[in-house]
Every structure is written in structure tokens, then in C-alpha cells.
Length: 284
Image (cartoon, rainbow, N blue to C red; front, side):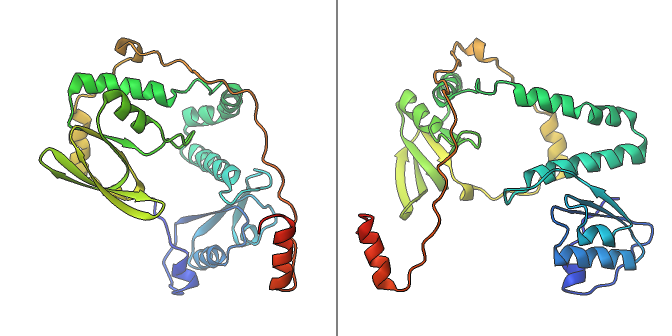
């Protein structure tokens, strides 16, 4: 059985737990979090075998654990600690493979560096651009004749925020973007949009295109019987070529450049000096 333990059990509530015959795995980038250290110390005191996965070999967490595994992901320069996260996943897979003696999993893990190098050197610029995606959706709309087409607001890869708007233009139907609430009333839809100034409510005639914002739907837990029913549903797969759409790239990336380095901040003594500095820069 696998279970997650909230660090606050130890750091806040000082709860004693029976962790005999339990492997307690603590994962951290810095290995200095007080909550995590308290949880690891408590787990060890309660009989658990503590294993630490940490990107900092000499971190306090490594001293608390019975066994410490250094991730060697290198220095982190972002809040997300992406390298440490990926390295910790690889370490967990390695632990599971050795623990279960799963040779197939071990072989797959050993091939990961080669696959990562191939992925790094691959040309990922051939992704489907917004206009091509809109044309693909238009073909499906012409086939299915829906009253409502709901798309995401924007992709997480390029953040273009264009496909829904382009589809509405090609389809010659109304659009309601950034929707956080949708109410259907016969042949119309009342849509609450999230805009810079707050919330805006508009009404559109159906058929229409709606692009969804984060708060349009609250994720829910799906029951196991429903998951099994969904697996039995037929999923149609259509090749883009069969739709007669040219999905080739129309844009070419010429070069990448890092943003200009930020200038060092200037400390001022009072408001008068601040106003004078802003006037000197032509900002006032």
C-alpha cells in the first residue's frame, strides 16, 4: 500500500504514528524545509525506514534519513525546481525497479538518457498552428453540426489564444471567449467572461464557439464504474489528411534571444528624489 503523509502531522499537530515496517520516502530540492525535516524525524522515531531523495547531498534531510540518494540534478534557477522533479521521478522508478526486480522497467530506465537526448535534438516546430487547428475543427463542425463548440482558452505550449476565435470566423458564428459561466436558454447562451476589468456577461445566438477559462468547471472525482463505462465507448480516430486540411507550418522561427538583463535598482531617500528621478527618465 502507498500513502501520502502531510508534514503538518508532525510539525503542527505533533502526532505519533505507528510506522513500523513502513518505508518513508522524503523528496526535496534543498532538504531544509522545517516541515519535511520534522516529518522525517518523526517517521524515524516511529519505526519507519526513512529514505531521502534530495538534490543537495549535504542537506539536513540526508542526515535524518537512514539512506540518502543524491539526485545530482544540478543547481536550480527557477522556483519550479523542474530538474529536481524529473530526477526524483527517475530515482523513484529506479527504486521500484530494484525493489520489485522488474528487469523490463530497469531496461526502460537505462534507455531514458538516450531517448532524452533524441527528444532534445528533435525538431518540435512542426506542431499544428492555430489556423490549421481551426480548419480541422471546422471540418468536424461541418460533419457533426453541433449547437455549441467549447474549446480551451489557449494552449500551454505557445499561449497563442487564437484557435477558438479563428474557428468562429471561419464558421461565421458568434464567439464568447474566456468563459467562466455558461447558461443555455433555448437558442441562446448567456456567457460570463473573465476580462481585465472583471466580469462581463454577454448573450450569443447558437450555434456558437465558446473558449473556457479556468473557473468554467470544477474538476470532480470520477467513480470507478463510470471509468469502466467510458473505456467501452467507441473513440473515433480521424487522420488529418482525411479531412483535407493542410496542417503544415506557415511560420518559421528565425532565432531565439534571451530578454535584456534587468538593471540594478536605485534606492531613493524620499518622494522628492523619486519624482526627480522619474522626470529625468522622461516618465513624468
